Structure formats: C-alpha cells, structure tokens
Length: 291
Image 1 (spheres, rainbow, N blue to C red):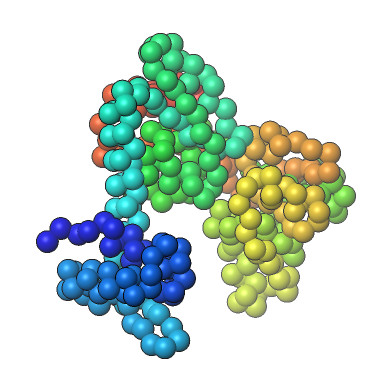
Image 2 (image 1 turned 180 degrees about the vertical axis):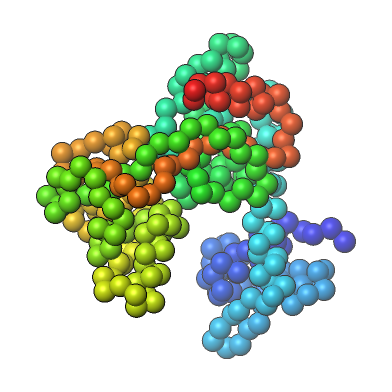
C-alpha cells in the first residue's frame, strides 16, 4: 500500500508538537479526526508511532525513524508540485538562493547573458533555511555556508573567507587587532553553538570542570539583523564571516579577527537527484566567478 502524504503531514504535526490537541489546532482539523488518521497510518505501516497516556505523548523508535524520513519526503513532494506548476504555466524561471554577505550578481548576470529569455530570480536565505529552499523547490541552487546537512545534495566548494567576532563598540575587546576564542569564554553566544564549534568545544570543556570560566549560549535568534541588535545592546556576541560583518557595518558594533578558528567555507548546493543542464551550467559559472 502506498503511503498517504496527507497522513504523513498529520504525523509530522503531532511529532513536532507532541500534543494531539495543539497539532489538530495547527492543522485546522478536529482532534478526533487527527487521532483516526494517525491510527490509520499506524495500521498502514504496521508500526506504533506514538506512546500516549493522559499527560504525555512520546515518539516510539518507529516514530523517530518516520519523522527523520518524513521531512525530506514532504519537502520533495512540495518541490515536485512547484516545478510541475511552473512547467504547466510555461514559466521558465531559475532561482538562486544566497546567504547574507554573499554577492551573486556576476554569476546571475552571466547566466542571463547566455539565456536572455530566462527569468533568473534571487532569494535571500539564513542559516536555518539555506538548504530547505533546495529541498522544497523554492530555489534551484543555493550559495551556502558550511556546515550543512549534505544528505540529498550535491555540494561544490567555491571559496573561503576569514571569520570575525562581532561585538558592541564599547566592548573591552573592541580595540584589539585580534582575539582568540578563549577570550570569549565568559561571553554569551547569540547563535547556534554548532556554527562555532571551537566555542562549543570550549563550553564542553568548561562543563567538564577543566576551566574556571563559564561560557553561556544565549537563546538563538534567527536573522542577522536580530543578532546585531542584540550585540549592539550588549547582550552577547556572534561570529560571522568577514563579508557578512562588513556588509552590515553600523556605528554601534565592531568586528575583530579571531586568530584560532577556521575560515567560513562557501559552496554551491543543489538537489542531487536533479539532472538540469541549467544547474550544471550555473555551477560552472559560479565556480569561475569565485576565482
């Protein structure tokens, strides 16, 4: 029996909320209807997906596996609908996504010059969705900053650039020519620690009791602008690629080189299952433009 994508979407809503009532509200359906659909999915898959009692809802091992597989499955279904819809409308569009601080103008103009009838669009992304836009079909290619989850993607390296720490203009380290990651040990990090593994590893060392300082990761915020507002307010620091820091120059913040962390790696990514000549052509253009 084929898997019903509608039931899979219902399952993901419950799995993310771990609450049938809230999931039903988000899906705009009645809770009993949602419960019946989940039971039907369990019957189809011959696996129990949730363990429920009066107070909690938890995923089973089968549920965890389905959740891991369901997200890319649903993203691919969304991508298929978008691409088929564009083809049905006769819309010849190629969309290039890019991270803040990256300039893609030269590559886009080169593609347009080769294909005057092609509508080339650009889309700004962030760390949270730089690969999502590929999987769900919103973009054909995406300029990404590593690290990313490479599953289902082809990734072509383009360039690398230094990373800097962004601080309030009146910070004790603001006038330095450079700092080391240990200098930031007592500061609040305003981004996902996995994006700054050197700082994250220091935090793990602190927790093990081998150092006296205690680094703290503040609640992550999403957009560059939000991060910089919090930096300017003295609530913490961020580590950015140099191009991002210089692109968002403002008088109440400064950036300082960090001597002992690696550069930011910039790559072009696209869905590995696609065999579009335009993607292959643009990848070569992007690589040439980055030299």
